[in-house]
Image (tube, rainbow, N blue to C red; front, side, top):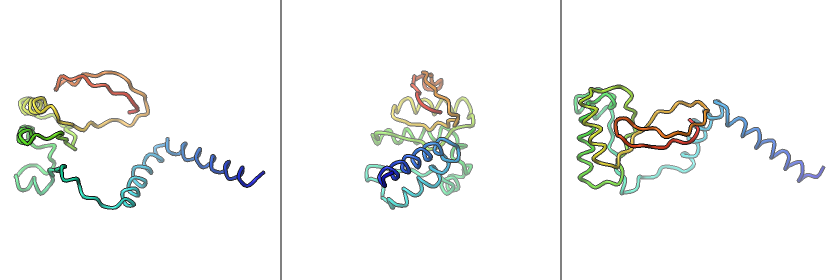
Length: 154
């Protein structure tokens, strides 16, 4: 065998092994916890673009407002008020990087849903299970009355 052929076969074996490992829970965790962290470390710190504004809803904010430490437990009307204040600033997108997993009061949920509907540019996070089932269907979001299409591995 030639040197080039052996190197090619060795490379293909390494690629195949990597692909198989990446499909396992261990491989996915390795990619998320080590690989992604390493890429950000290599890239280095970058400042956010001037047109991006991040509003931090953290423990310091909770203490200042005398609210529960987890912003997802705050009254939804407070999040609605934030959305309404941001609408006036003509933002392209308003994104919440938090999961509203606990039910709020129906009145609070309604106020929040109305603010999201009126803004028309709010993005909410969704917690997805990590089962490897292919899902393709159209679902209807009950609170906001919009149809969305989900297609992919969840």
